[in-house]
Structures are given as structure tokens and as C-alpha cells.
View (tube, helix red, strand yellow):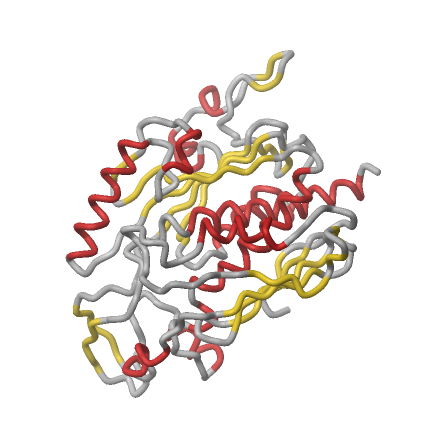
Length: 352
């Protein structure tokens, strides 16, 4: 099956290209009678929307206004497929004319060409980060499902360009443009981004996603483990290069006596497992972290080749983010929402 659809009981299919007329998503499997209007989805999209003036962000200004085409009647979901569309309003395709026969380093240009023998060079086409707006819209719908049992998903920046958040005050996440839980670190991050942007370069970082009030029992044995599906969902975001759950890579350096989470009458006494054991949620907070690569579109001179295999040098112009953070933060949040909504509905089929 072509890889444009994600999920089982709660399924999403995204469509569209960065410089096409529109992007969108079809959500199938959302239960009926849940309250939904465009404003609820719009609030989620606003957190990801480009062109709001952040130091890391592109100057492309997209309103990202969502329209609900189906699946909602009189303010309630009907149980039928929900189709959402977001029209592209500020695409400047001419900025990419000089790149149509050139493979940009760090992009999917060469691999899309190898797979399909054709590619939309305008802004990266289907491989563009623009596609993630559709994921955020679908994630808002997924949150409606999670609300039925009180699940909350929080995402925040813990590192950018080597600057780490030392404090963890989740209440300040919405008070800075980088969705960082450390206000002082956020200011340092913004200063670094401004400096690196001036050098024509870009930065990567780390995003943490927390899921609270997740009931125990979510996840399927063996191949559809909850952590496996979370890892796949997060790795499907273009800029993500690594995912860890709980102690993650650090677990390789611990002893069993250190990594095991003791259990008391009131529950687990630590959370190295990140809320998941044997691929199934254990009732503790689910903790995921993702490593985000630097944006590959930089204005420094780079060496590459064209379609004829000839060596060329390029300097990429146009409007690009200096870092995928902060706009990737709500995307990571959305993907975790989609996985949890899917597994919540699957679990309801097991325990009726």
C-alpha cells in the first residue's frame, strides 16, 4: 500500500504538495457525536503556521485556514470520513526554477527521482514540511477522541543547537516562540538562531512529547507495539532522524537494577520505561524524544550534481526556516495524538 495512510481503527490519509493548489487530509474512523468545528482545528494549526515572525521561521505567510468538507453535521462528527482542506495562498514557485534539474543536498530530490522518475521541484513537493499542516489538522481531530478518557499530549523543545533547557516549567511553553519549558534557555536559543541564520546556516534540536493520563493496556503485542507505532509515527516526520522512549539510548549504559522501574502499591516508583512495557502502556506518563536534523535549505555554497550527473555548486535562496523547531513541535504532538487515538479505539474492541 502506498505510504500516504497511517493508522488502523483511526486512519488518516494526507494529500497535496507544497506549491500545489491545496493540501489536506481525510480522517476515517473518528467516532460519531463528538463536537467539532473549524475553529478547534484552526487553533492547532495556528501553532504550526509559517510566517508569524519568529526568528527561526520562513517569511512565507500562509493563513492555513482549514475547511471541513465532510464528516461533520450540526457541529458533531457523524462517524463518516472527515475531509479537511487547507489552500496554499503564498507559494512562489519561480524561486525554485533554477533548481528543477539539480539535486539539493539533504533533501529528498534524488531519492524521489530514483523512486518515481519524476518530481515536483517546487518547494520539495510532497516531501516538503508543508505536508505536516495536514497532520496537525488530523491530530486535532484525534485529540477529540483522547478527550473522552482525559488523555493530554504535551510537546516542548528541550534542546536547540546544543543549548539545553535546564528548567522544566511546562506552564511557560506557550509563552515563548520555541515552545520551550525554560524561558531563559528559550532566549538563548533565539539568539543562537539569529546568529546562525546570519551565517546562512541552520540548526537542529530535540523535542520531547509527553502523554498523560494514558490508561494501561494500550498497544498490541509483537509488531504493533505502542512504542513501535510511536517511533514509526515520529520517524515519518521528514526532519526527524532518531526517536527514543523513556530512558532511550541511556538504557544501554544502565544496569538492570538501575533501569528496572520498581512497583509499589500505588504504582511505579520510577519511569525508565517511558510509560510502556512489552509494547503496552502501563499507566505512567509516556515519554518520547525526537532528534530533529538541521533544515537542509541553507544559503551557503554547497556541492552537488544535476540530473545528468554533472558536478555543480548551489546556494539555495528563497524563504526557509533556520530550524524545524519550533514548527515541528506541534507536528510531533499531533503524531502522538494520532497513535494514541488509534490504539485507544483498538483497545475498545478488545475490552468491550
